[in-house]
Amino acid sequence: MAGDEAKGRKILVAVDEGEESAYALSWCLKNVVDQNSNDTLVLIYAKQAPPVYPAMDGTGYLFSSEIIASMERYGNAVADSVMEKATRLCKEVIHDVKVETRVENGDPRDVICKTAEKLGVDMVVIGSHGYGIIKRAFLGSVSNHCAQNVKCPVLIVKMPKSAAHSPNE
Image (cartoon, rainbow, N blue to C red; front, top):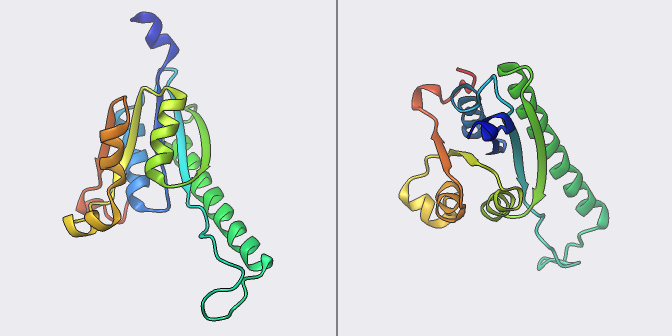
């Protein structure tokens, strides 16, 4: 066991644009990551693939390659922004924490599960949006899907209502 502790853990943390993921990351840094260990945080962002549009939509409008390229640039800018913010939060809480970032294309449920398996992580940390039963039925719960399909422990961090606008507390 002593050798495992020296090696440190690899913890996959799902991040997105929401306050819930920022809260989950902050909570993980304060309560899961050992400041004196060799733990590595792997931040994963699942970039939704842009919808595939036919050259002409049903109304007769043509989607130019410039519009499609613009949508792709916007998606990349959002991913860069999310990762920059998450990495900065990591360094603010634990100055010398090891952080790796990964941006993958696809449905967040599949991206998180596949990445966790591929990297052989020790734990997955994911925020909960706290959707009600109806919304969850239509949208599907990313955290529930990951808890059911990932082979390692999955920590689902639910943001308390009192922290709804302050992820750093």
